Amino acid sequence: MKLKEQLKALDKLVEKGKIIDAFQKYFDDNVVTWDSDGQKTTTKAEKTALLKNFFSEYKNTEKIKLHDSILDGHQSHSEFTFIFSNENGQKHKWHEIISRTWKDGKVIDEFYSKGNISDLKKNIEKAQKENKKLEKKEPKEKPKKEGYKKPKLKNLAAAVEHLTEVVEVKTLPKVKTPKEVKPLPKKATPVAALKSTVDNLKLIEGIGPKMEEILNEAKISNFKELASANPEKLQEVLQNAGNRYAVQNPSTWAMQAKLAEAGKWEELDNLKKRIVRGVLQD
Image 1 (cartoon, rainbow, N blue to C red):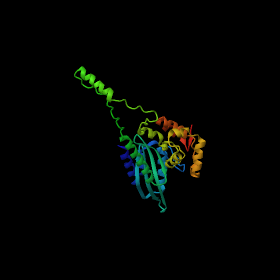
Image 2 (cartoon, rainbow, N blue to C red):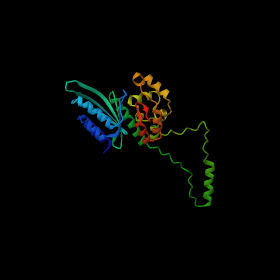
Image 3 (cartoon, helix red, strand yellow):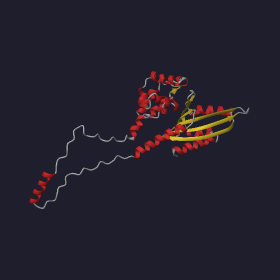
Image 4 (cartoon, rainbow, N blue to C red):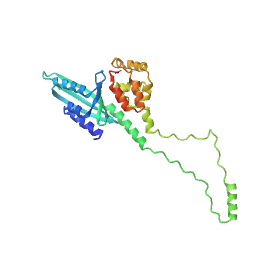
């Protein structure tokens, strides 16, 4: 099943209120779920226990609405509104964007954030269109230079006559000085080069969509830049972003970014499992 179909099937189960069923079917055993307020689970069993505890109190589903969803590589983003109520009529309502990271048909990371998906969708679609344009664009062929064509001469007299014409009529082209030489046209930047300048920082444990925006504004937009950023600089960026983000611990971000930059995804996944609330566990 393609990722687009898996996302559609998962969101459909959630919209029907079968949230635990969806979690059991489409989530990895070691899935990490978290939000910008610091709440976090590190296994499917831990998250399932929280869900069961919630639904034991809020048994009535008043409304679940899927507003929109979008795919971006191996990441998906879905916007939902949830309203549940308990036996006393007390309602529990929230609106969020659920950002999921997929691997081998399973969700390995799920992040919950506030806002709407429209701006995120526009940015992703714009980037996808730009990549398609660059992939389709082919380099122009250089015009072939016409060399000297040897004439067919029937006899020696004709040959002598031809050489005379060449000497008298043909002149050497003017040699351009270095100042007159025009620079070669710049080639289009290949897609691979563009991808190297902007990475998906949300793959780093502790970084969500909003945090990625904050880092981008601080001129940290790829794994290489994040890997070279010292903890003091990152902490300063978080403090400037406000109290909500100043409490986060970025001490492992550079370590994770080095693995991501090297393409060591399995090692990165194993490292992320050992990070709890931003702290690396022994």
